[in-house]
Every structure is written in structure tokens, then in C-alpha cells.
Length: 477
Ligand SMILES: Cc1cc2nc3c(=O)[nH]c(=O)nc-3n(C[C@H](O)[C@H](O)[C@H](O)COP(=O)(O)OP(=O)(O)OC[C@H]3O[C@@H](n4cnc5c(N)ncnc54)[C@H](O)[C@@H]3O)c2cc1C
Image (cartoon, rainbow, N blue to C red; front, side, top):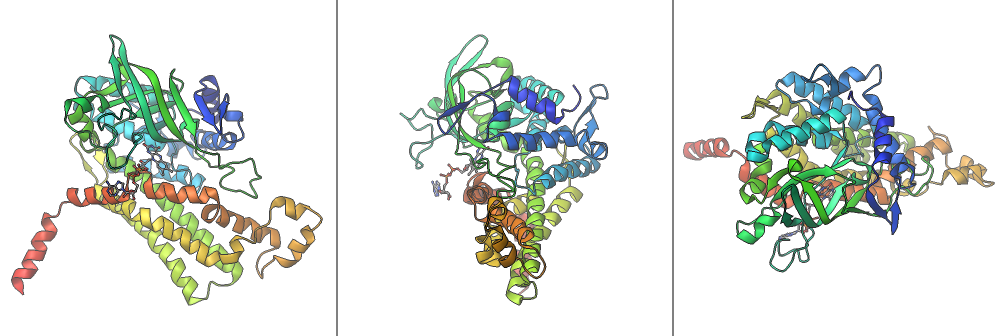
């Protein structure tokens, strides 16, 4: 099948309704439910970009499988040029929403690509991951994923004795396995076709823990699989009032596996603690996914920098040194993301799986710093905007009998009242609304606890060179 368009994507969601719940209601058609319809249309628009006469050549490539064009995020890069092309494609998708749609499908596509390229690492299940990657690519499917088990008590791992809440094996049969338990979150689940289930936290090597050492990929409408969504952030308001949440609420869901059957051909890791514990480092997924993440961060930074600039110009505070200093922090964050992306591609090398891999360190640095930079960016918008982020009437107010007061009193030297409100509604939605709050939480945690991730980065960083330099200086003085 050639690359998907928006209609095919929406039809796919309708043809395979999953067991999805929101606010106590079972959703029969996500494409028509108020909480999901506009976000579904946004994802559909991403797929339409693959058919756009101007953009198509930046969004697709011809795979080896008979010259059929595929989405560029599925490419197995073997050159720097491939990484540059993939980066452009990622940026096109990120810029569609100013980076607030974080789980554009490229996020998962590069994970699968890297795992498939490293299929030997998966031993006898290697062919399964290769086939699954081909299947997802050829059908241009949309994936969610879930890594983290639920836990009763955060001091203990989910596989602590007596706590069988985390996802685990119940039975191995001739034709597949049966699993049970729950995972804490899957972003984009309401709008996805398939779910990739991988291990995250380190599984201990005792015998009882091996039943947690699993990885597989299955359709979201697999019997027994249940998605319990958080409250909707798109509550059906106009796009003037809620410009981001009305279009880009990708959804997050708790995932319950109630005796879910997984056929053997969809199993990638089975009761294998060693493989589960090292799958991400060995498959070299990190740098590929970080290219997507840092591209999204760069897009988000340029969007917020632009927004802040427009705000200061409209309020005529852009000449104030304090405001300029705040805005310059936004420039730094944007430029650092951009520089790290460029460095990672300039220094890319072929890895042991024959895949051109962006250099990990600059991307890890950019990703790690964004977990604290993003909340600061939002704080800066609040400091710049102040009461202008609250004096933001709705579309209905402008259309009502008192609308003329707003026209009179809310204009600035450079903007009419409605134009000003439109700008500050955007700033409100990213910095003050529930949608904005979820964005901050997402950037802090979506890729794991930032403190433990930072500790891991330090442990893995090649420190020999800097130690040598320091010792040379110490010895010289
Ligand atoms: C909006 C959002 C979307 C997400 N989407 C996905 C998704 O699509 N797929 C997915 O798999 N996951 C997703 N996640 C989950 C994410 O992977 C986890 O939030 C992350 O791994 C952190 O785990 P946790 O939430 O259990 O926090 P915890 O591990 O409980 O950490 C919470 C805080 O407690 C501290 N802490 C915890 N334990 C200790 C300890 N032993 N010692 C010291 N400090 C400790 C941490 O430093 C942190 O500050 C998402 C999370 C969010 C917020």
C-alpha cells in the first residue's frame, strides 16, 4: 500500500474500534467523539502532507520493496543525507502544531526501524520484529507505546512479591502467550492503530521476575486490551477560544491487559531478563528517537519564541531590558536545540547494525536540558504576559451585546481587540490552561524520570577524554 492519506487513517480508526473509555463512557468511534475528533483530524492532516504536491517529496522515500513510496520516518538511514532528509520530514510534522503534538507517528516509526535493524539482538524473535516493522511500514500504521508498569508503592518495583499489577505473562500456549496487568500510560492511544509494548525499568534477574520481561506489538482492538483515557482537554470549545487544545489533544490512557492473547509472531522478547534490560542500549534506538524529540523541541522553541516576540511587540514592552533578557533565554533554548541537532548529524556514524546513527551526546544533552528549559519557557510567557493572559474574552463575548466594549478597551497600539485576544488566547492555551499544564508535565516526564535519566547519561558518557585533559592541567600547575 502506498503512503496513507488522512481519509485512510480515519477509516482505519473507524474500522477497528478499540475498547476505549473516557469519563465513564465507552467510545464507539473516536473520529466522531467530541474529545478526539479534532485531534484525529490533525493527525489525518499529517498523513495528507505525504500526498501534498509540494511536500510529498520531503515526506516520503522509495523503499527497496519494489519502488513503493513509504513515509520517510520509516527509512533505515545509511548516510548523513538520509538523516538530513528524515530531519526535514520530522520538522514538517512538528511545525504543523508548533511541536505541541509530540507523538506524531515518526516517534514510534523510528523506534521500530532501529529495533528491526538490530533484529539479531532479539535472537529467535528477531524475524518477528523485522516482519512487524515491514507490516507497520507497508500499511503506514499509527502506533502508541507503553513502557511503565503500574506500582502500588513507588519504593518497590512492580514485580515486588505479592504485587502482580504490572504487565506479566500468565500462560504460554502453542500459538502464543496470554498476558495480564496494567501499564501507566500510552500517549496517542485513542488515535492509534497498534500498540508496542516494551520493557522499561530494569527487571531483576531472579526467576519470578522473568515473567515481566516481555515485548510485543498488537492491534489496539485486540480483545482484552482496554484504554482508560484521562479527562479530555478538548471540550468542544471554539478554536478561537482554545486554539491548541481544540486541535492537538493527542490523549493519554492507562492500559489494562485483561487476559490478552498475543500470537507468537508478534512477540519480540519472551521471559528474557537480559534482553529486556539491554534492549534500548543494544538496539541503538535512543539517538533515532532523540532526533525526533529534539526536532519537536526546536519546533516548540521557535513557536514560543515567536509568540513571546509578538506579545512583547503588541504590548510595546519589547524595548524593556528585563523583558528582552527574558526573551533572550528563549533564543538560547531554541539555538541550543538547533545546534545539537546539527552536531548530531554532522558527527553521525554507521553503527554495528549498519545504520547511520546521529551522534548521541548532543541529542541527549538537548533532550535532558529541555526537561527544565520547557517549564522555564512557560514561566517566561507568564512573566511577559501577566494580566494579558487572563484578560482574554471568548469568541462569544465578542459576538454578544457587550462586544463593543471589548473592541473599545482591549485594543493595543498595534493590534485590534480581537487580534490581540487571538494572540493572547494562544499564549494562554500554552501557558495557563489545563492543556498547557499537561504539556509541562509531558516535557518533564514523558521520557522517564529526568533525574534518573540524567544519572544514566553521566554513567554512559565517555569521560576519559575530559579526565585526561583535567589531569594534564593538574600536572602542569
Ligand atoms: C504526559 C505524559 C505522557 C506519557 N506518555 C507515556 C507513553 O506514551 N508511554 C509510556 O510508556 N510512558 C509514558 N509516560 C510515563 C513516563 O514514562 C513516566 O512518567 C516516567 O517514566 C516517570 O515515571 P513515573 O511517572 O512513575 O514517576 P516516578 O518514577 O514515580 O517519579 C516521580 C518523582 O519521584 C522521584 N522518585 C521516584 N522514585 C524515586 C526513588 N526511588 N528515589 C528518588 N526519587 C524518586 C522522581 O525523581 C520524580 O521526581 C508519560 C508521562 C506523562 C507525564
